[in-house]
Image: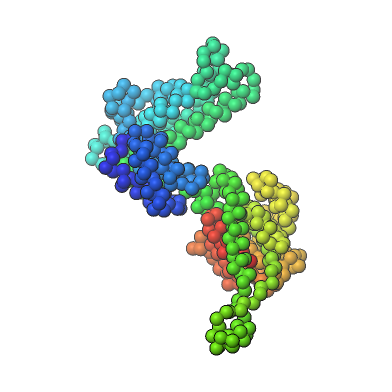
Length: 484
């Protein structure tokens, strides 16, 4: 690792600041621990430094997807263009690039699972195929203005090497050669099952190589534009900071896995709030009466005893395609907290309303398929599949009035986009008049409310509406707004 000891403190401080900007909480104590870890481990082994800093700075394994690329920016594997295999040290920009030769060497490295060689090939690929533009002052013959991992991978196409690698592995096994890359000989016996296992392992290695290409492209760009800017702009945030409306499948899967730990944390907060609320407010009359024995000074305030009663919770969720991920995650989270309430009822809608409480209860075993089960098993759509808040609110107020009582707190989940239909404000007013409290959680940015077909501003005049774009905002709002 090419990092001088004189700059280690500055690099470590910049690394911590970049991680904090991505929402990872790192205190002074953790930073001091990280410095001591570097002092103990030294800089000779870069991967040992990576693991040591991760142990000192991170609080969960879910933070590694942010930590690893940020670490690569501030503690890079090398500086400048990579050396060529003959050790001349010249970059690929100064010689004719041989794509086919690189693909041959990449296939061999993937079959052998040679991590060091894969990193070297990723650097060569970015240098040879990832550059775009011309650096000012180079006269058209110098370095590139930037480097793109997408461009590199689209030209190299490592995924097309799968069949070639598998054929080489089978041929080597048939000739009695020892298995490479951690495979055992038993994995190469004839059979569809073992072939599938081998193919899955090669696909995983290809994905790891793609990640190495992305890391190398970010390193080269960071050398020109600065590591701080690239760490801020080019590193994907943690899943709990990604907007629900743009979250991908992998990020939603990670959020579903986080439901139970998050529910336990929120349950602890609710229990603490409930203990504080159980003390009640000051009973002024009894306090003044008791102060007569101390000369009119209220030495011992008397509190009203609060009758213990767990509140009821009602969820009304838009499960149309645009906000389905947000609604599904929230429903699973609330279901995990059902022990904190006397009753929890969940209703879903697109343009019609149906109760899905039982589907949610059964959906905890298979959270990934919850959305499709609601669409197929509940009557949430009518003659079209577009969301219609006016019709849904009207049907809810007409059919499920008994679900809302003076002990009920109602949460409406949705973006309030009516597709130019009537928002049916009187129906929402009816629900609000019967409930203890009504909160609306909107996954859109506040700046987008009341734009286009959004009726968010209209509904916000009747009920409290909050911006709730990601899991971090949701957990904060749930912990603050849930009744005790």
